[in-house]
Length: 160
Image (cartoon, rainbow, N blue to C red; front, side, top):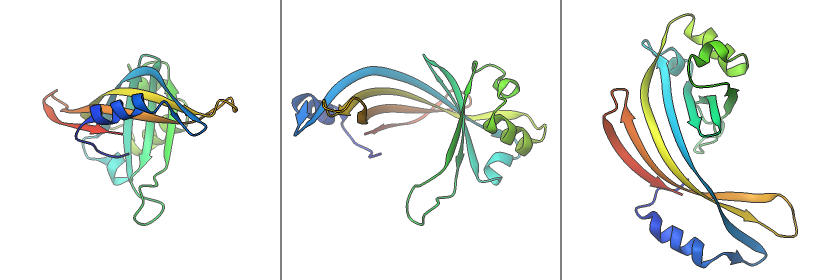
């Protein structure tokens, strides 16, 4: 991911370069992501070297545990475990997979609280070769706003 100061420049470039060699770049539906980062009041999840994210989209909800330590020095090469959820409400009780089990083990009955939220508008472009059925990758243009647990704006970020 790369931080940028003007997504419009990248957007225009993508629109002007719909074909690069054998590759096609095609717009995909936009996504709205609402991420809530959680921990206990005494930071048990952080102290266990994890971050806990609850993500809500129009397609559903998921919980993700992200390791905070990089597997390789100098690279952001972190492990993530994601578990789909039936919904964002009372999610910990309904999370029966690896994420829910690990969070319950770490929290040990201590309630979780919201640390901050991240709201992202994601514009997506599929990259594919028409001779192969699967997409090779995706280019995402993100406009992101960070808010405190009290919903106070903390900052904005644009990235590719």
